[in-house]
Length: 386
Image (cartoon, rainbow, N blue to C red; front, top):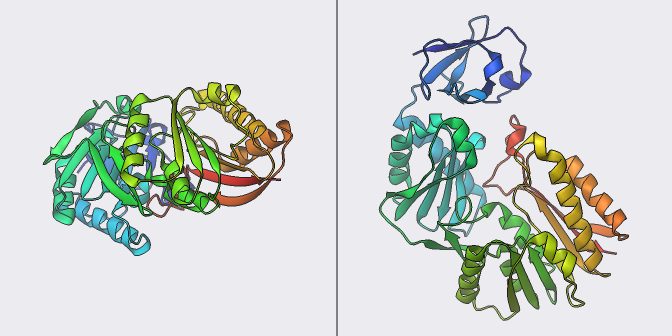
């Protein structure tokens, strides 16, 4: 097996368990093929671990193990089984979960979501893509699924020199996969965003629904209505779902029909910024803002900061006393302390004051690894307007 030698440096990050090795940290990587498994040694020839190599990526090596074990189907089977067993310990009465969350489960580049008895997978790096056969074979043995759907469509695939792949890899299944979460019937859209549904908001939506009774909601960036349907189940009077996607709102209508909610509902296709600036409703006493990642590059970080603040100010100006304001950020480049500052500044600029009632984040099926701060991305807070 070919070897990668690191430069002479004291990298606490790597010693502490972080799996990424950047191109400028490597001293020697001669004759290594893209995607190939390599052994990594420090400058003193001490063994660090095994991982896959990609010369096209700034992150040239992603470590899979610190042990000197063979990387084969058995290796992936054991890793996936361990990740699934962990979820089952903490997630009860649910047939949906994120089974594998990349680095958090020691499988960089791999995402596996389970919706009922279907699996949706993403191979986001060249290295993990080279082991697609082993991963799929392991999934069949562990889950005996009704179907496995690949939805590798991230823009970051270009940096890995990979093409997008969207297809059924094992058996076939429906375009909309029905599953249950928190007692609500949902649909994962195989033609939609990411894996088809944002399972990471499972706890935040449930916790907010505890304050739903009698509320009228603006669900901004609603996608297929996760927050709205949790609020309706919790006793909300009505919800207005606002999203720019025709497809997302069509799926939301299907979900609404599946559940026979009694609350009123309205579907509005609009730009979130325009909607908040141009709409006021005296009956609205709850607003949820859950946008997609506002930036994935440090170059546009300033624009993202301004975008968050503009959204929050516009929303807060619409809310009266005893209303609820909930905000979420999945932008990993916006750290929690900065995000909290943006919220407080928005309250000040909108001439409102709020008392925090929920401080949320990622659920157990999206675990934050202590050695990899990049696995922490989701922030959520809810306030009562005082």
